[in-house]
Amino acid sequence: MPATYWFVSSALREVTSSSTPTLEVGCGAGQYRPHVRGRYVGLDRTAGEYSQGVARHVDVVADAGALPFRDQTFGTCFCVAVLYQVPLPDVAIREMRRVLRDNGTLMVFDYNRMTQQQLERSEQARRPCWTARELRRRMANAGFRRVRVVPKFAFAAGFAGVAGRLFAPFLVYWSERQQDWAIVQARK
Image (cartoon, rainbow, N blue to C red; front, side):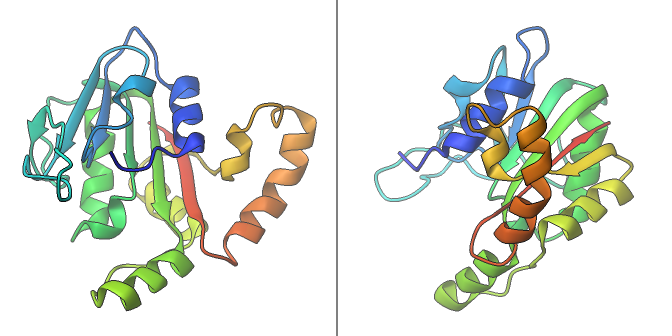
């Protein structure tokens, strides 16, 4: 089973609801299914093996740029380390917005520019690269509102409140200067 990142699990417990379904785009092995409150739908571009000996747990096989759901189906949509692999990430962002209900939440957990550049070198494959702020701008351009960059430590126990709001800008600045995650939260 692939890694389950603590900050993704924590965020999902915070933003998902038992009253509305949640869509994971690029679900792979489906390791976040148990961390979602309510109904979970895992979508991936293939149902084939995730990696050698690791099965994918996919509910729907489809492309992130053409989601096969009606408008306003989901209360929450999220993706983990997916957008940098999608040929047209802006189209995928617009599709996720389309299937979200009004006031629904999109959480994007993607590798930041430094991590993506390292992956390019090791995998010898060209990938789009962005900072969390550039990803935030893409989401705002797709029509999302209340778009904010969130440092992964914002999901740690005890980080909420005044101290968390004071340190968040520093942590975003710090995380963009090392191999880390670009995490953006937005509302439709």
